[in-house]
Image (cartoon, rainbow, N blue to C red; front, side, top):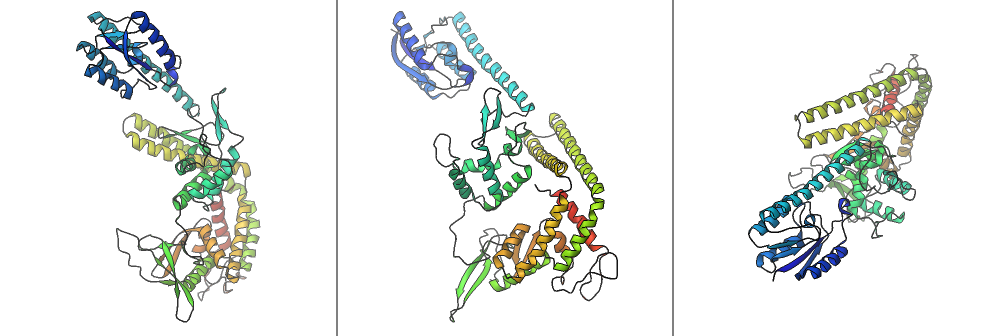
Length: 534
């Protein structure tokens, strides 16, 4: 008597949703075996697609057939056994070698004859053709959705899949909560673990567990371009048609904060070490740490030096920098970008006269932005042509295309912001002048933490080498830092009364730049236009 295995399979994928459930298949096959008098020795069933080889239960069943535990299989239809050429070939090979002498299907006739094996191979071929054709139809639909700017996937946190319209829409319950968290992280004041706790406090939790989001999910949210209006599909960035949650500029700030604060911080050391983590070593690039020394007299001193953690190069920066000396250098850096009262008044007065030239500079700026956008679009088209002509590998194409898409989005946002708010840069310039004037008050008040935070906000790349602190200033602060006004805060520099133009005298050379205030205000105008803020 021939021994049979019952095999049932149900894939959870959409294209097979009309196939009978495993329970229904088992019921039908048991009834069929009873009617035909088949001797069933074991039942196998699994929920796994057969599009690709590698089904564990299926391979286990074939292994038992090789051992001789059974020589027949009872299944609902040949496509339950295989939808790929490898598994289908194994079945036919087992029939050829008489390891399988009988295949029974309630919906398909089979006998171990040349005609029967031919029909079985046709059935397997039809199952594979159906799968391949269905896959191509699905991919064609996905490509069409991508061309419309629609992501064919589960909506990220803050959005939901609108089943009726088949679109992704903002979720009223979570949209503004996620936006608040993204904005908070962009400030640079949060680590991944800190923003994870903030998300949990706002009710942003795992959809199934109800627990705080894992750090990998938090990081994925912070890196997801979907939130500024683009989306990624198979590594390629596309323009989305959904409502953006944040601006591209804010997204870039989030990426900068991820680099600086992305990893969970270790437990903080002693308090009172003001400049710990403020700068890095100018030679090896590793962090500057601090030590507290107590002298025999009972006086306490703080010293700053390199952590010497580099394993690839030996750092020669063995000099220790006293906190008092570092404070003096911090004051000097703040002094470089501070404006005394007389210069504040001169800047504000000249700013008022700049209104007459605003229209021309604004039109020129808008036209330049449009030209840059057109040039970027042309570069994208040439890049695509190069890829289609097989002049570029896929990896290089995706990397360059994603960078151009990001650049184009930033330009479009700047143009949109400027057209919406017009000449708001004049107000930004005025606020900047007043903030630069207030920087001097930090020095007068000896507000050490205020000066440190001020330099962190307006600069970057702070380094200490040979006992000297250096750093870079962001736009527009670098305009002040680069001007040779070293004595302006002490009052040695004064507006030049001998000229209708506003200039400076400084040092002993009595030299002055022509039209100095106008020059820096024009630079500031460009800077604020380029770095446009909400």
